[in-house]
Length: 294
Image 1 (spheres, helix red, strand yellow):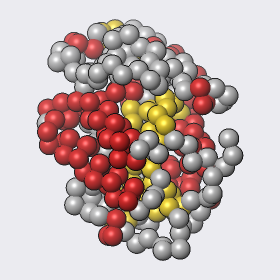
Image 2: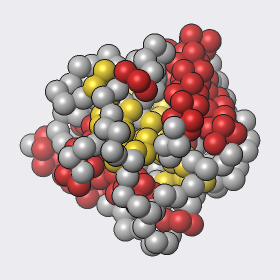
Image 3: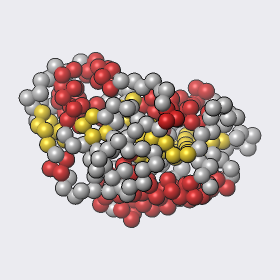
């Protein structure tokens, strides 16, 4: 695929984990890159509230051609399940208002979605699977995906991601969380039926860079092809930290949350677009985490 004309990214949600990495990455290529924050003021970023701000509030250069990456979203699944209408006001309605505004300015859009759009009953979901989500978060993301494609006539890109593994100590991502639990000395309860494709954040940044540079359109799954349960990862981390497994308690996720509003096996099959992608192995990620924690 040939590269498209270089466009200047606007990263909505650049104060978050993924958005922050994207902002740093694209700034090294293009110093005109724009990043926004909503609730967490961050040096170099412009304020943008999904519900109340408009594109005219941003300081954009009339000589630049832009592309938008939408990372901004509410992601706390418990909060979203408890307040579906209020959170949909942000995750669906406000986001679609932004999408409409971007499209009216002919700014291409890449929307960050989630493996939660799948029901999680069996796993190994392909790009084109249309089974209904069970979590409100997944329902909201699925609605926004659909409306994005409707508003733009399919001339947009959706990237569905799994659990993100960070690349720095203390960033609050999955392996940090597990390591901290193991270090606490308390019993660590880990679900054997919560299954997903943990993916290194640097791989995600590389994939998004590729999609932006090539002006890719469509809906794509992107994840490390290896799937693990939360229990699997906890045991692997315990081994790497030389903690032993005596304080790891296997459980079913329903013991933590009996609501049934959390998809269990959201493992995905990578889009064919990424067939040749070289992923960072989860074992390498665990080894790095163990070094940081030592």
